[in-house]
Image (cartoon, rainbow, N blue to C red; front, side, top):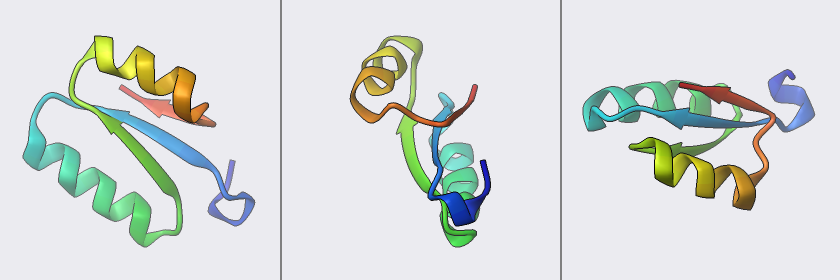
Length: 56
């Protein structure tokens, strides 16, 4: 899924600084980014956001 197709990425990372850095770079490239800091919230986010790609 490329940024031109409006893909949504789910990032799951428990280190807030790393999560922010990765999110910033994907958003800068035009992707919509959903984030979670643990597995439980990631599962909830998957059902709400329906991401095209997950980065765990």
